[in-house]
Image (cartoon, rainbow, N blue to C red; front, side, top):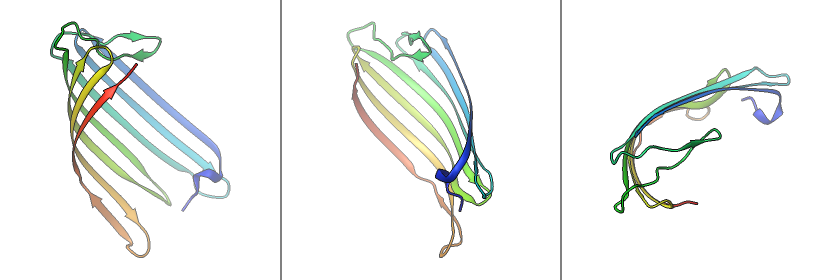
Length: 154
């Protein structure tokens, strides 16, 4: 297997776009990575995501200096947001078997003030990883994940 730390040339290409219209956010990104290790085959991996969210209480996300900010609630009860995301990652190329994964995420956020957020996500993932000796084959791992998070941010 090729070792990336021995590479003498790295190339990265990324493209990101976002559109904000009132309470609606649509965002996506594509990233491609390649390495040319000395005396070994070249390696290329890539991935992308597309996501959208809607703030049910009407707030819009701020945008400044290339960064999209968190929702700032206009009401005492906070702001509610629902989101949907699809992502895909392919790290298999030539002798490198880094795996492939794609997943769907459905989420909900509750913003309480400017510094507190509660988040819930459900993720359907599909992934395949190739293993060498002694398995010599692909292993499919398709987890379903439910996660909760409380976040304090400044």
